[in-house]
Image (cartoon, one colour):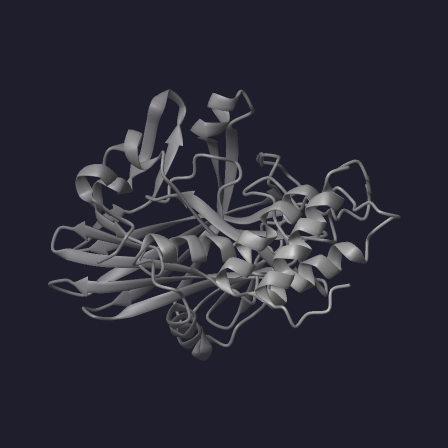
Length: 376
């Protein structure tokens, strides 16, 4: 039985479901985060949030959201949901949700008339890419699935506004398109494992609201750009995988990649497994370094918090190698007895005086975990 499961009666209650968020990260520093019904409530939410070192040291929201529409018997049922002024939610895709399950990866089940469709999301642990699988569990006749992506291409601390400088042109790639809204950003490749029909109708959706930002007293209205949409026909028991990332994929490998990533996940069948999964999400491996994130979604690394939490996030689950690599990352950046407060290359500060004390605590725990290590 899944440890994280919510039924329809709770999911359709927005006061309940919007207050519960789901975070997925990978080892490259990217993440995907939203509420459990996929309605973004923070400017930090998005389906693909990744680092763009060509612009700055922060994280950037490339793929903000996706609206999927089921077209059946000439009727359209939009499964998406966004908040607008006056507490208006449009479309109201949450009313079709049957249940949410996160045993291994997030799974939302929708019921539209006699159509039952499942949506599963998985963030690639080795690439800046998210894969979303739609499966038609049941239907009386073939359906058409429309997939409309929403893009922002901006830093997580800012908000996007409609403007004349955005590049709205796309380039066709195998089973999809690629787009780069602004200079300095990488191309975002959006592909499917089977060839879809792509309709290019660039447009802006104005004044989407983020309730958590409003509650915090920050700007909370954003304009989302959509380049167009994909459409593909599906029959009962058929599925399609949508991939969005900064590298192009071979369409024949998209579904296989989704399956292999799913098999590699630790099932969340117990509280302990949930903690193990959570511990792994704070470890980043990129640019030939291994480090810890102090917290999601807006924190970066911190010497103090790294030394405090490192034994619990690594040694407690038997990951001695990651512990050593993180320590080496900070040792290489030492200035005298002090560690940099963050790993920023533009703004080095050495003001966390207790970090070296926690460093020795971590060394003691490392020696307990592996007495063969000659740390002195």
